[in-house]
Every structure is written in C-alpha cells, then in structure tokens.
Length: 149
Image 1 (cartoon, one colour):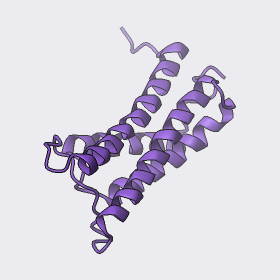
Image 2 (tube, rainbow, N blue to C red):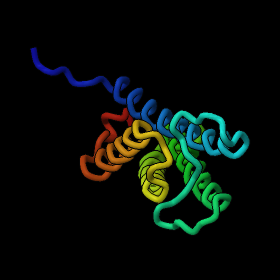
Image 3 (cartoon, rainbow, N blue to C red):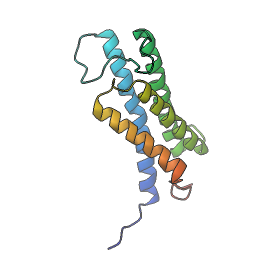
Image 4 (tube, one colour):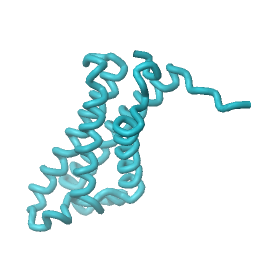
C-alpha cells in the first residue's frame, strides 16, 4: 500500500488548526505575565517574569510591556491568519503574509525573552514558527490547490 495523499479537507483542517492553536497558545504567555504581575510569589508552572538577556537593564515593567506586545501581536496575527485561511472575516490571500509575519514576530519575541517560558513551550513554539516559515517560504506548501483555493 502506498502513502495516500491527504485530502484537501484534511490539509485545510491541519493548517487552520495549527495556526489557530499556535495563535491562542501565545495567550498562555500573556496569561503568565498577568499571573506573575498580579500574584507574585504564586507558582507559575515554570513561567518566569519577562526579562531580556539582550536588554538586561530593561526595567521589569518595561520588559513585561515589550514581551506582552510581542505575544499580543503573535496571538492576533496567527488567529487572523487562520481566519483568513478559512475565508472568515479577512480575504483569503492574506493568510500567508499574516502567518509569515506572525512567525517572525513570535521568533523575535522568544529570542529576546529566551528562558522565561518553560522549556517544552519554548521548543514547541519555536518548532511551529520554523515549520510555518519553512512550509510557506521554502516548500511553498500548501499550494493553492492543496488549500482548496
């Protein structure tokens, strides 16, 4: 038996789900920042207050604001990319630039604030961002035909 090709519906579900879940996952980082701000000293499950290894003199409040901005932009961008991919609210041709831009913003944010997320979350987020960039920029996948366009 050969390797059957994934159906268009399967591809659409996979891409939509990956973009949406990854986008919403950035909400976890926002939630952690809020938890740490409003409940200092409480267990955080491995999440740490925002601090940048590149900008160590950045005050805690400023680091939190900068990190929060990265996570909000990533969250909104990936959710918008998923909705555009599905043709909801936004034009369908916007999903690729939204996904690419969001992956870059997320990568920059994770790099600037490396070590503040639990290791699993960091590795998973980096893997999804790299997969998005490789799929769209190098492999040019999914094609318009694969995506049902």
